[in-house]
Image (cartoon, rainbow, N blue to C red; front, side, top):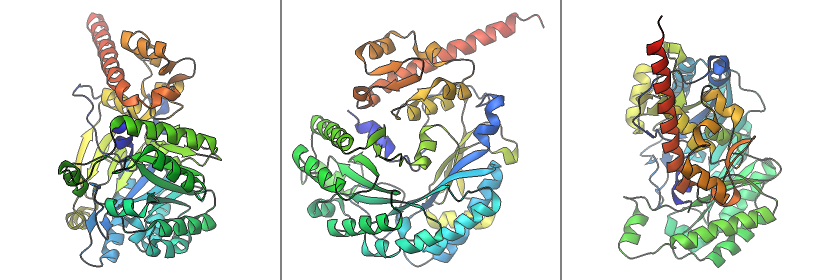
Length: 449
């Protein structure tokens, strides 16, 4: 079903580097005629690593703060933001996303300070989407108006469940009533710009209870909903409970039915699915996450943040996958010493970049259009790559995949089984890219010059 695909998307706010192949090839990542478009803009992700408690299912990079170091964190977030913006030499930040951790624990002045740093270095329009993840506790709710004054214009609320017993199992520190109050206040402040996250496949959950819960949520939610299937992560408290027989989660066929029922219910309420896990009405899509799924540059700031950008400021010509130091205390020292806490950087070869564009782009319901693909692969079009493969033709014949004048995309049924088709698409991409490289090398060797 969609387990692996949806799990991957739970990390879409801050995707980690994923080495999809060991193929070589460090050629330039873009057609030079499009390089200014692809390298002049970037989205910005800012990671606030602290939480009051660790949820039973979570393995994200988060820490329980041992003291109030907001001032130091703010200064370091500002400094790293400035350093990486200079390194990227982008002229415009298209969106900002404050994630975590629990960024609604940060003081609103921290948010304002980071945004001021961005606006002081590059263009950040008044219309740019600025999202803050909010934990729907009384503290989170009480600060919403201050966050708006600081520059936030979109909230993403981690509701996860409207069942109090399930919230306890998940280790959440809010109740369903508090979640509903937070949604109401957020909608009052930013009507049409509030997203809610809700999780399915929870312990002991049935298809019927999930459908009923989603219907209740749709009575109070705004114009954006993100659905995530619970994934048991090794090392978490919930994983140990399930492994030890203390709890059980629904079988894969049950979660598949939950996903399909949710898609149908959301559609009936006027929500259009625009990505595997995301639904919007009145065009209230997440522009920040669309940057990830469209293969655009993004800069990651804060402990454990990830980024994808060309370091033009040091003479770079190819996009790099960058990871910041995980531990907040170590990250702070590194930022204070050298202006940033980049722990790992990996130059993406041409094939690796195309693999990322494919994997991320196919998660959108619109898929990948020919013009967009050509920006990254001017010499090898979608039809050349995927039009002749017997396995891909079977996907096309069955109606799970569509390749036409618009481009390559999944059908309604195909989107639910995307993870089962991606391996074949990636194999075909590597094969055709390798063939193209071999032909180019033969032409070069036969050229008398």
